[in-house]
Image (cartoon, rainbow, N blue to C red; front, side, top):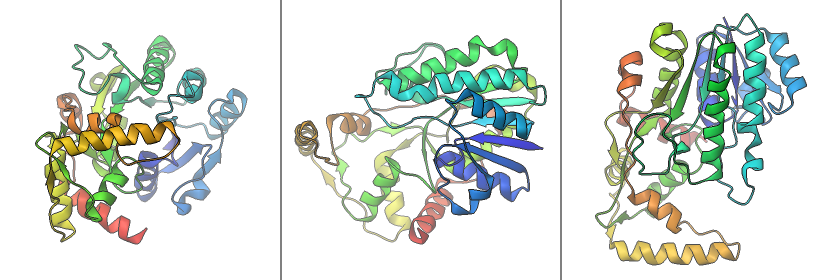
Length: 320
């Protein structure tokens, strides 16, 4: 079995690569970024998915059985417009065309994003889109490209990771853990949000199950990846503190957070970074819950409890 992971140098990709390598699967990482885990350097192919010729050469040289597409621009850059996210558009189109021509490929998993809809929006169905960022718009186009070329790929599915956290993570949840561990996190009054989160070890488990599930269960379908039940962020902060043997965070009036968000927005205008803005405060206080019944029906219960994930993440943070 040969598997290509595009974006294997990223957060989820690094964890997925480690899991595949430990299973002694022949795996290749196609990414323009060097692997975060230096032990993965020998599996890395420095290829930009927006470069059709080089991508075509690389994939045809490997002749994979499966492709897991995670490569994407993910940071929120509203100044760059849609062109900033061309990897999510033209890069995906390149990959779809190449995979459609290669008979060795049995199945492709394409990663999209929960931000194809704004936070808090209750979509009527999977194709009910309502993005409010260029990143979200680019992921809508990702899905449109995949389904518009669906006839050329025999088996595929689309996954939308929810709020994923764990080893090798960066913003925003690495910063969240850092704030809790430094005792700088405060509960926002009684307005803390409840969201669908996912420990990355469980996300990797779900992706691997989708790779080998019966075709009629996954083909041409969209799955949210995450853990059930949803979690209140204040409860999560308390659990992290408890696992780290720290005092639980204190609660501040919501008005203090509103004032801080206003200050953050003003400083942002002048190019200064501040840990809180209205955008972040809205994310902290707006529920964002997804129905995970489809992914649980296909993959079953994930292997790690939330406490398992917290302990493993804290251990990784201490080591790194």
